[in-house]
Amino acid sequence: MLLNQFETLNTEFFEKKGIHAEVLQKLNSINKGAVYRWIDQYKDLLEKKFSYALELKIDALYENRDAIPMNELASELEKIFNQNQ
Image 1 (cartoon, rainbow, N blue to C red):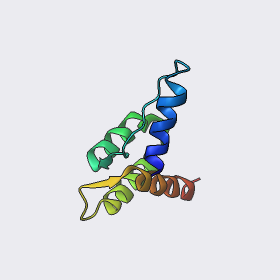
Image 2 (tube, one colour):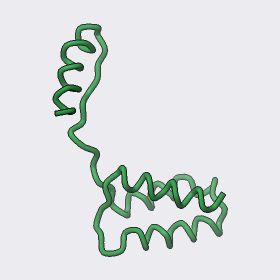
Image 3 (tube, rainbow, N blue to C red):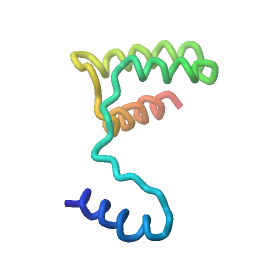
Image 4 (spheres, rainbow, N blue to C red):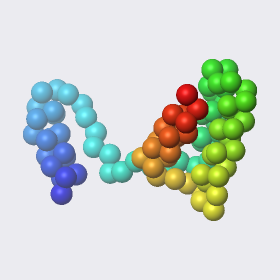
């Protein structure tokens, strides 16, 4: 229902105003490899000790799972980063 309302808003308002917007059906789940690639991109900003601990926590998070929904992953990563501040 909410998705339909956004699609209607997109068609009736945004497109008429020349604003391009796209309504996503849902966010894709993220696999562990993608998270490791993300960590590798920012490794120079992370302390060496923390990046290793982060990888261990990612392994635990993905235990028995191939992928994690993006909103759940974002929440879990936020908790991990807040614990290490």
